[in-house]
Image (cartoon, rainbow, N blue to C red):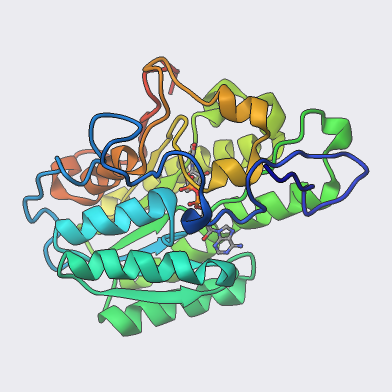
Length: 299
Ligand SMILES: NC(=O)c1ccc[n+]([C@@H]2O[C@H](COP(=O)([O-])OP(=O)(O)OC[C@H]3O[C@@H](n4cnc5c(N)ncnc54)[C@H](O)[C@@H]3O)[C@@H](O)[C@H]2O)c1
């Protein structure tokens, strides 16, 4: 098992098991998030019953190359939607695999490697998605960065800024640039985290951005709900994705579970993103779905 430091050196060692950030799904060791036998009785896609809920829709999914973002692209494809996914260039191989899986379900998947911490890239992604798909109906803000640091005294200022630049600023840029292309019935869905509700101490910067995402979701919903655009969030608990071996130490990985006795599979979170994008949730906006394995939280 290899160990490496946070990309933000401060003299504090952040042990990272298995791989460096960003995590790559094709290099994951241990249970395959899409293996039909682990970590629960089925891989998610096998039991999922699609019903054309997103037929003809066009979705922009950030961080769609792997983990939860990939699962969203696949379930959206099963429901009849095309996807445009944005990801970091190191993740090209994972992105190609997402594209293959979406196309296997009979839908289109467009790829763009870019760094969303730059607002110009956020604009370019929205423009490219609209051009490729002929419009936009769903924006899924899913990309994020995290790196464990146990004490605020050891948390590098650069990491604090980078986590905010990755996890919250692009939500503002992408929503601002996407909304002119959205119409009544469109949805914006933000990936938050249980950590915003439980205040996870060893992910202080990440946890703070996830709280900001909840507030952003509520404020933007209050701006746009009367115009027919719904804005919601999902707050997952532990999910076995490349983010985990790339950013959590061995102890945290061993404790990576929920009251259900296991982490979730990405597909179990992606079902919430289908619900929130479809007319099944037509009376829901400004809310958060807690797909967290049974932790009861307020809000
Ligand atoms: N895995 C969990 O336990 C868990 C729990 C709660 C919330 N989440 C949230 O789920 C979302 C998806 O994470 P995941 O667990 O599927 O991991 P993941 O590593 O598969 O996905 C994160 C993605 O973010 C993208 N990304 C990061 N920095 C970027 C940048 N600067 N520009 C463009 N893209 C960038 C990468 O493409 C990466 O694939 C994140 O918002 C994460 O906070 C995950």
